[in-house]
Amino acid sequence: MTWLITGGAGYIGAHVAKAMAGAGERVVVLDDLSTGVEERLPAEIPLVRGSVSDRDRVDRVLAEYAVTGVVHLAAKKQVGESVEQPLLYYRENVGGLGALLEAVVAAGVRRFVLSSSAAVYGVPDMDLIDEAAPCVPINPYGETKLAGELLVRAAGRAYGLSTACLRYFNVAGTAEPGLSDTGVDNVVPMFFDRLTRGEALRIFGADYPTPDGTCVRDYIHVADLADAHLAVVRALTEQPAGGDLTLNVGRGEGVSVRELADVVGEVTGLPTAPVTEPRRPGDAPRAVASAARMTAELGWTARLGVRDMVESAWEGWRLNHPQARAR
Image (tube, rainbow, N blue to C red; front, top):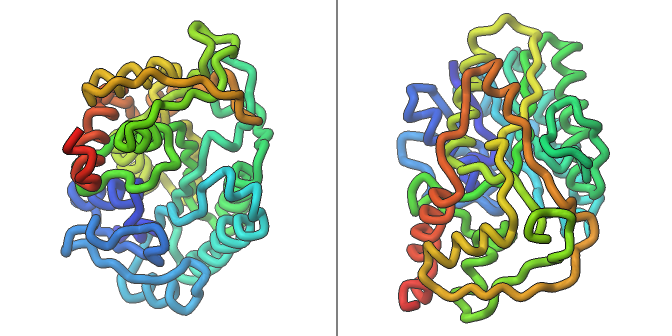
């Protein structure tokens, strides 16, 4: 088996690529490096620079490396940006996926894993969200992820592909400092950015119907997420063609934003003293995964906790932000 990992130089993608290669899987990465970082990948993992929408480039990669399976992570992923530029998100996330699937089918590739998101659920009113929960996304990003799932499953039925759609919850942490999240759009690096600049952490809304009034989320360590991908690709390798999986990837445990801020303060040794700002539109009071199906079907369970995520992320943040080392 040889697996093509699209977006494999990104924060999550590089973790997936290194985990799969380290476990003996043959991998090749396709990434346009718009947000990916070439240095995240070791020399032994081939990197081809290009877009999934470039049919000629994709055809050449599939043929040259005799690809037999695809893990598709390349996508636009910022909720706010998706609201401002929905056409861009549909073109990249749905159109790009369609072009990739056409190439996959033409090349005779029979296994396909889609990076999806808990954003497909929208704002569900339940303690634990399982895969049977209604999918009612509330922004274009979530809509494109749901459309992508529908497209992958339809292609699987029509062309005999074995498929998996993995619905990530909140990803944090790093397996090693050089693979850390370099953006400030996710909550943990957002907290670090505020602390590094000597500013108070911000909490959006403290009057939700939760134990401490702040939103509750399910956080998954990116190293556990990478291991989940490895479990999935091995399951697709072993099963006959035509099967499909839809799986949450989370810990099944809720952590409030205030609790997360407390852990950040403990790990960094810096005063947090969050300030409360108005609620953001569309934030659910609680969004926590049921991870039971992943355990039952693949025997996979997350191993690392929130403190592991914050400690590893802080180490990576300090490596990339010298000013943080002085604090």
